[in-house]
Amino acid sequence: MRISNSISELRQQIHDDLRIQHPEWVGPNGESPTCDSYESRLMELLDSVTRTGSDSQHLDLGRRVAL
Image 1 (cartoon, rainbow, N blue to C red):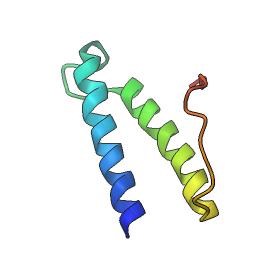
Image 2 (cartoon, rainbow, N blue to C red; image 1 turned 135 degrees about the horizontal axis):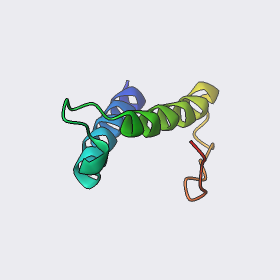
Image 3 (cartoon, helix red, strand yellow; image 1 turned 60 degrees about the horizontal axis):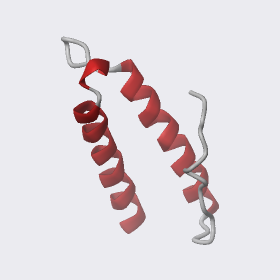
Image 4 (cartoon, one colour; image 1 turned 90 degrees about the horizontal axis):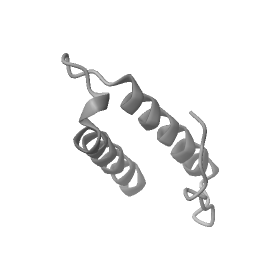
């Protein structure tokens, strides 16, 4: 399924980019609760859109979301 692949690719890209852009968030053991929190929130937002099955749904990603 193309949407699934796109979401999976997007998730991986964000996973990698957050760690590159914010190395201070990554602990010596490679774990990053802050990055994990951002990724989890993104997956919740994407899931809410993909569950509707509607291509007309849009996320307002420009607004700030408290984590």
